[in-house]
Length: 308
Length: 308
Image 1 (cartoon, rainbow over the protein chains, first blue to last red):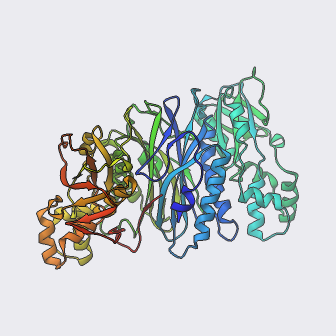
Image 2: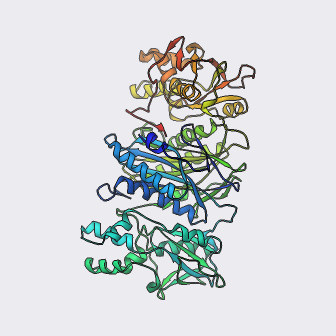
Image 3: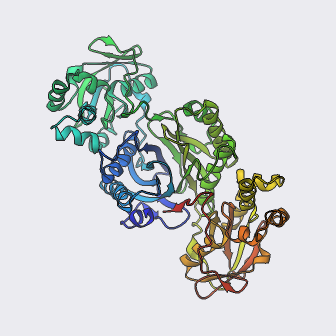
């Protein structure tokens, strides 16, 4: 099944040898390859009644791609290991494969190999390879005191969409789509790659991911909540569900945005919004108050992903 | 859990950036990277009552590494996505991680990243990166009429070990170990990389994997069953269980050996045994009879892995 649906598309020039042999060969022009892996499990990271198979494939690629894009790299190839119950309809496998190919193609990358096995629930395990094109990687550890903190993307939309799905509330199709089909602002991240001192993708929740940057850089991140870009729908949905929209914006997960810091002298690239400043100390302060808690958010079940 | 146990070891020089950031960076000296992914699922590819966590980690790496070694490449890095039920003891996660690191270290490779998520059963998804060192890859499609067919490793041992475990038979510790802890003859594969016309790893069953070479090369593989290297224990175990040992040797899975073809003029490298000849036609003949059936073997449950 996956053999047919994953093999059938046209590979980019970076795929020197595609699927069909024991392994694939991908070019890495500058002699380095950026690599990251993620696993999505049915019932934890997606639900078949909320997402189409194609959406699940797209989500698996987006989540994975964001990890190498936030280093400043361009994805070149994906491998996909897919676990499915024996009762899984072929259409579901083909749909997931199509979503994976769609998202990979949008990125100019290929799907070069993988594995298809039986498992009790659907498991989509994706590895992405990326090319830095000779540039240094943008690490988490490069933030400096005096840097401006900026973000790309809209925050809180995916968490609001999830809350609406859980509540079976009506309306807000854009928020539901934000949860179902992540659309990371890759171009903004690449635009920042040349000048950002530090960068990460935001998927665990804005504060949680800013804390990763602050800890790796041994500094404090001061942000102002009113400046974080979001959608007007988030405030409307928060009224319907009677919750604090800042919870979604600051701690909601799967935003699929990016956060970065820029030195005081550089122009902030297109697509980025300044939300605060890097100062001495540790941790993350929001509107002047230190956020002690993790602020992390892990999927719609009790636990989620942890980067190794 | 996995963060601690997977991050703690010393990385090889090929790991430019190890775990801890959004992605890892691995060097690929010749501007190409060989990549392959495999997924092992509890109850399909391993059983916790038969294998120690460390054995499972080693097995996941061996199965994956063999795919890039059979191209003639040296593994440089592994990523590991691990799905575990919330009730999984930390010792099990640490044991799997230790087995992964042990096997990676034996290969001179690093474990550079991954993911830890909740899943209904243990799922180990591994991706390997490999370096061809400037040499051309040894493909499945290079076998030529007149080539000698040779294999490295012992065949039928793992299938015999599995049959003994399923039958709860006593004795034959070496056969049980063959099933539990694969030990692919990597050095033999690397010794063949400079001269073999075609090569593959043997994990689906000898005939099934030879058929992959024959189909990719558009030739027929003629082999003689008596020449296939095996252990004397296989014949003894087959008497105990009253089965045909050739079934294990020719169709048993998880042999973790290698098969290759060599031109008539070259010296067969150390560690290889000639078992037949490449002739015109298609398919695989054993002792003069065409084997129509797949001859493939898929784990101890009803289905197993399929390369994409």
